[in-house]
Length: 224
Image 1 (tube, helix red, strand yellow):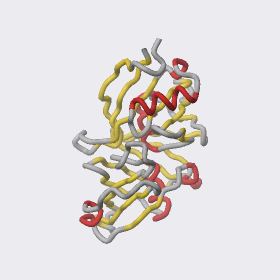
Image 2 (cartoon, one colour):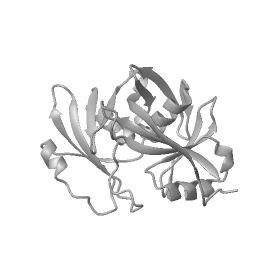
Image 3 (cartoon, helix red, strand yellow):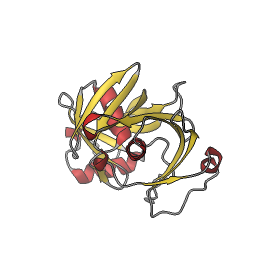
């Protein structure tokens, strides 16, 4: 059996919500990329992380249908779980810091997968959106309070892989903070919270709260 853990990343201030993340601590249990992709598809989370070296923070990230060189909520969740000061992803080295119960990672905006950042006039417009047809990865957002830097957002991956709406999307929040050039507090999905903002050296930081949900064996792919 392939053991994995489930985290909720970018929880709200009350510890609720957040985006579920599957983490396989022993990446050697599934060394082949095709098997990892199949396992991520089987779990069905928006992303699954395979830890290849826990001390060095080496991780490998998969959505149900594609391998990702970098993604925000997997990096924040893995950093929290492993307790490392940095992560090594296929895109590059990701810095990690902890601040008052929050786990934050800093990365380059160009590492993030492409997203269409679509602004709306009000949070009510964002809340009223229907899931668009597959084909475009849309991050819909509106100011809640522009002066305070608070944002309401929803995310529609559009990949046709069963994830119609993403509960909390770190890479998209990172891209939005990079575009606007300021610190943001984003409320996404049902009530997840992400904090993002520029850092020195062209980096952008994104972070939030992480909660461990469960650790369990999974049958099927990779079973002994």
